[in-house]
Image 1 (cartoon, rainbow, N blue to C red):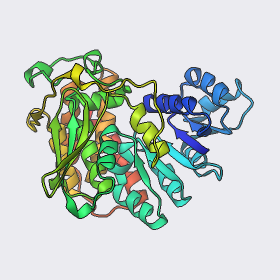
Image 2: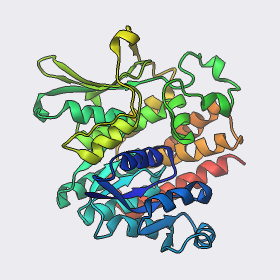
Image 3: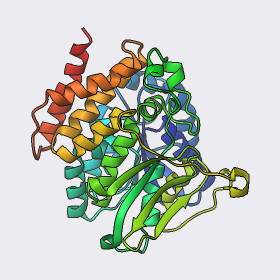
Length: 380
């Protein structure tokens, strides 16, 4: 039985991870769990799965939860680390949103835990530190994102030197059929209406702006050690082909399936084995009949362009990209800026930053906070 530490238990990925654990109680148990402030959502999960350790975002939430349960509760970043390095934990599922998951991931790697990574911001913010630590401690990072899981599966048994390029598919998000002009005045509700996937608010907004795909490109660069010029993004409306790998002999291997995050989540938990997943709809190609593909337009989706540029520049540029995006998306969700202002704030943050070539963790955390403050300051 694999004992799981779940960071981000009440988010979309966290809830679906618990669905998988619930389906296979003989294979998995929840050892520790962390969530933000949603005590109401967390309480029934705590009672059902009975984790040995619980972590929340802050002291106020900790006090609130302690009035409801008689179990150990920790708070903040140190709590995330403690939940990740417990001796009894085998696999750490990093499903928290944003760069807050970075220190816990690094400590879990040092503790030689297998990492199932759904938190792309960790690699975007500090991919050089995470991958170097994983190599040094001989820890495997198993991707949970559907696109990276698809690439991982398409690479099974193949040689890295035989890869010609990675092809990451993009649904296009909520606004894929809108022109730039039509994006003026779109609402939060419009942006959250994703045509294919059921995801959390932040990632759904990122999908609408195409920043999510940009972050995935940077994540793929680090996970698979592939140059940016060999990572291609293509618009694929149906989200049936989750990503592909083209080899030097022009063979293309793809992973297909219905759009359901429980598939890559379960694969990360069971790798190298597979288990039945009866709750997921089987892929019926006869029913789908037609698959569509379109070239990605960098002028229509400037966030994707900025992600490639930041990735190629390297160093601290991707930290700025991620922090500026997180802050701008939050401002949009709060109704304080328009949708198109998200990309404007990211571009300004990148233009005004002086790149640091090889930042250490403290420098990364400092740049992350400075960038957030700058984006907030631009609001006033």
